[in-house]
Amino acid sequence: MFAYIVRRVIQGIGVALLVSFLCFFLFQYVGDPVLTMVGKNATPKQMEEVRSILGLDKPFYIQYLTFVKNAFRGDFGRSYTNDLPVFGLIVERAPATIELATFAMLIATFFGIGLGVVVSLNRAAVLSRLVMAGSLLGISLPTFLIGLLFIMIFAVNLQVLPVFGRGDIIKIGFWRTGLLTLSGIKHLILPAFTLGMYQMALIIRLTRAEVSEVLEEDYVRTAWAKGLPSRIVIFKHALRNSLIPVVTMIGLGLGEVIAFATITETIFQWPGMCRLFLSSIYGSDYPVIVAYIVLMAFVILLINLAVDIFYTVLNPKIQYD
Amino acid sequence: MIRRIVNSRLLKHYLRDPSAIIGSVICLFVLVAAIFAPLIAPQNPYDLTSLSYKDSLKPPIWMEGGQTPFLLGTDEHGRGILSTILYGLRISLGVGFGVVILAGIIGSIIGLLAGFYRRWFDAVSMRLADTLFSFSTTLSAILILGITGKRGILTVILAITLADWVRYARTTRGNVLSVAEEDYVLAAKSVGANDVRIILKHILPNVISSIFVISAVDLAIVIMLEATLSFLGVGVPLTEPSLGMMIAQGREYLYAGKWWLIVFPGAALGSIVVGINLLADWLREELNPKLN
Image (cartoon, rainbow over all chains, first blue to last red; front, side, top):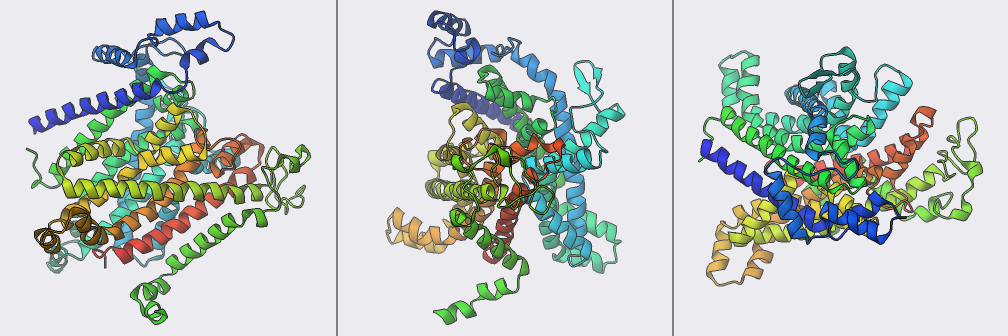
């Protein structure tokens, strides 16, 4: 197991090196951050000065090697737009995104698996049909549209939930949490449901398909025939054996949730790192873009590792190495 | 021929599946609306001479202040919502089909080659595919379009394709791996059939149904992605009609009670994707023998 983890981490570093290399490679062909920084009225001499201060006058592979050397020391450079260290900018905003994404995924997993099981037990019931119709809508409405509809319903018409920012924040060390205040939790509800809706719908559909299939298996029939309580048949025999594909999808979904957090954070003015990423894209803020992508590579690596380890819990037959 | 179609299993199952029928009716309706948009639309929303600021932000026709020919109201520039939706559908479907065809062909070829030849090509292409896939198509497309900073329908198609081919490549490769061990493939190899023939005649026919199923699901995903990219302002240029961009503009009037700016384009977008997903579900059940 340990060797496996080490191998995966080395792979992750490889991926981070590769994607950051691709970013640097692309940067040399597109947009000019210097132009955005100094404005159109700057003289060519001023522009050259800025360029050499930023190191942008050097060939791209030198820029890249400098970046890698510094990155290994935790220094990702300074943001072009506000001259603050990029690492600090991202770390400062990370808790907001982590809280949002975690809650979205918890909502999706809890309701997704729960409703998926309910639906597969009685496929013809009215409730099941409603849930399946809802899940069809869930996979058919893009996240930004769901968010706007929620705002229209809950904030503009009913005026029951806030839709702007994180509410009251309590600082614990560097971590700013919104989970310890009532206003913070209220602010979390709509963004988290918006972000979780698509994944929830996917999980409902997959769980239903998998559980329905497993319910036909001989060992489940045997379990019913033995007169085991339905709780045990459903959760221990049927659900546990259906979960591997569902867990795989939840793992993939987490990566997707972080991508879609860009949209949710924009709509709800959520002060997280994904919104920082989007504004860095609008503003050609290269250091922020690269640092965010490298960080994402590691986050995704961690998620995949966690999923792999969870497989061994679900099915002890699975072993690595 | 006609009798074969009438008696086929596919048609019987289709007629017994109400959601497949609803799905195809929606898709057909949208397709016709998109193709004949210039004939149906009451106004050409991108002909600047036909726009007037007098007409801006009119509500739908059944509400007070609504006026003809703007059945579903107008936006801030005086463009009819209905007309803009009809033209926007063309972009949605154009980008959708463009990406599905391009990414489908590229991804399937890479998947076929990776699964058939294995070795370094498999290792390199699948590492790349895993990386792209775990970053998610959405993030990759935002990144590619954001960094290049170019706007255009073709650019959007290419950028999404660059992020999206992995969907086809991964599944196709997996299926090729299992088919390549079948007796008929080994037999073809042993009688000295060349690789191209084996791939086209013996492997492709056995993996193509799953490629079709992925394309259907992918079409829905790509249409949503295009809308999302345009909503974020990194998609199609401002000069083109796009459902995502309409919704982005409507967002500014969210609190002003101008709900028609979001609800109608949103409903149009939602219905296309629902229609495609219903058909995709039906296709999956028909073509996936595991579920039958």
